Every structure is written in structure tokens, then in C-alpha cells.
Image (cartoon, rainbow, N blue to C red; front, side, top):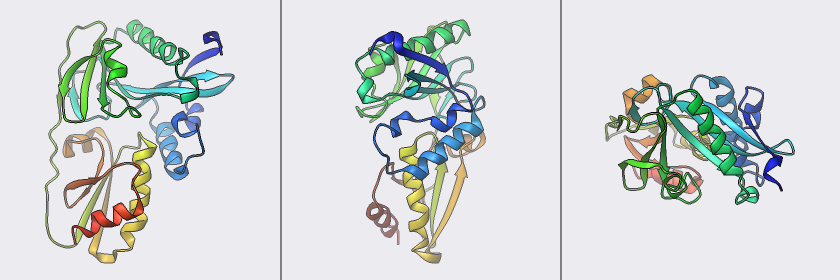
Length: 255
């Protein structure tokens, strides 16, 4: 494959039903959650999400999803005029061929033309999910470290930026019925897969469990102080790609 074969295209509503190429490298077990996420992108494009796709022979092999900081749904209070990366991925077969560089360079060039102050991204320690070292080698600087996640910043037109983590405000509770709060951001099919499983499993517990779902918006983000998660009696116990058994156990621990 030649780098000239790679085409970088701005995300359109038509393309949104082909979003998340990370889920199409192999047959995905999370078809339902993938559909939910694609519909969310379609409904919120140019509002809470923007993006680019990398194509080879008309096939989407890479993506980069983002939002302006004043409209980004992430757990930080960031000054306007910057850009927040949600998710970046190139399919494994195409990694190491310059696709990621071309995708990111196109993104940065467009941001410079728009006079963006800089780029914010929350990275992780996981090699398979927004790994921090992929960004630090590009010149990103650490703004806020935490145990497993870090907020990084790449200056473009402004050397520094104000961005503070939101303070979670979900109170831990006891007693019956057990309350399960689901914050649905719909930015990651892996996270949504657990939410889809949870809805069915919670019914098994009858009136011992009360489900509450909140769609993530700027208002709910400020209210809860976190951008996503599943909270059982106020405790965040479940994350993406878990098992039915782990979900049942997390609920049973609170009974």
C-alpha cells in the first residue's frame, strides 16, 4: 500500500453509519451497541461530534472523532477555542504504514487554519485504547495526571490552556431498592455494550433494582461531574466489555 492511496475525508452524516472502524476489523460481538453509537453520531454531528475518516480503496480504515472544547462532552472544564479528541484509531492491518500520521496531520492542518488554540486529549495506560505514548511522542504535554488517565495538551496558536477536571457529584447510598445510574455518552461501542447487557440483566432482579438512564449533555455533564459510567448505589463498578456474570455480581454485592 502506498500512502498516496490513503484518502482523508471529513465525516458527513452519510458516513456516520460507517463510523467506528475499530469495530469492523473482525466480526464484532457488539452489533447492537455499534448501531446505537452510529445513530448517536448521526444525530449529533456538528453539535457534539466532528470527525475524519481515512479510506483505502473506498474502505474506512481509520477514524478521528473530536469536538470544539466549548461543545465537547468530556469530564473537564476547558476554555473555549480549543479542540478535544474523543477517539482515534487505525485498523491494525494498516498500522505502521503512515495512515495515522496522514490522518492526524490533516486534522492539525485544518485546526491551524481555523486558529484553534490547541488540542486536548484524555489518554490512558492501555495500549489498545488511546495510549498516552502515542500522543506524547507528537509533542503533547501533560496537564493533569491521574492513576490510569491523563489529560494532555498540544499547543497550536496558544502555548497554554485552562482545563480543570470536573468534580464527580454522585452520592454513595445504601438501602433498597438498589439504584443503577447509567450515563450514556455513546462515544464508545465497548462501553455501550455493557450498558445494553445491563438493561436486560437488571430486569432479573425485579423491584429490587431501579434503573435510571441519563443521556449525556452539557447539562448532565455539569450536574454529575463525569462524562460516562455505570453507578450502582453511587459506586462506579462496571466498565466496558464485561461479562453477564460480572454484572450480576456487581448488583448482588449491593443486595
